[in-house]
Length: 432
Image (cartoon, rainbow, N blue to C red; front, top):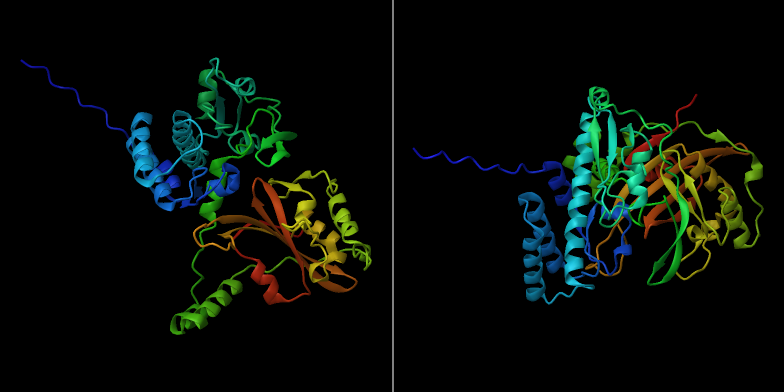
């Protein structure tokens, strides 16, 4: 009597991770610093790959590795074939580059998918435990974080949710109250430090200073799952049904667009009442441009030469510095549209906004073959100064791992204000 063959295990697709990878937009780049962490969460890019056909084929090979569970050797064979057919060359040793491309994409996709599951189950499993691979390749700081147990929503996971660097193999495990009792785990108190410190990093353009938590590599001081949540939340929703929408459907394309935008504005919640500020925050006219910039920076403890980190009302860390007011040619732009006198109102809008909006949109670039998507964080505030309502608007764009800014100051116009209120509302001031 022959022995019945045992059924072979069938791999279960990680749907959340696959969905994260497939939602990305292909973006050609020259170097890995061309995109920020926020942009990488929405973009598929391989440093130095500008050919869109080669990029699409590499992405398909990564997708097969994720969805079908193929090995690094299979991916390398795919990549060699792509390079031979397209004439693509990759910087660095092939073995190292191929492993980095595959593992970086797989680990971030797994992390984003895992975070989606963690959020879905956090009522039943409200804790996370940091787990490092304890061998001779483990970074000392990561080894020190091993065993840390904190609530899912603790701020520690905003910056220390793995992976936390190139080649990082750390993971987290979700836990229930019953798990804590079963394994004898306790909440880590005090939690490990999660603040950032200035660090000098070497780049092809010279050394530069970035704010990073100790033990975390540049470009990895973020929770990719939270960034993925942000992008999902930025998908435009259809305007609410009503007479304006009905009119838009019956109108021509240009008119319909205008009517649809009016419908969206009509559905916006009313702005909080303007806050009164002293007239002393309006600076004198005729000062040198640098004096206005210094006044803005001093509100955040920054100087012309040294930026300062600032944590906004949502918990995101912004790097405030002179580049906010500097053009690509190195010239100060603070005097544009006669707004220099109001820079302290702009600072107040960042420190205590009425609303904060997150926006994703294509960058304005000269060549259509170089698409890029930018993440913007927009601060909106209205102030009453000297018996007049003065709206202050500040728009910050995340690019190349620093915040760069475009600021504007306009008289009170409801239509103009509402045009700034788009994307995903992530914060709203509530009157007490």
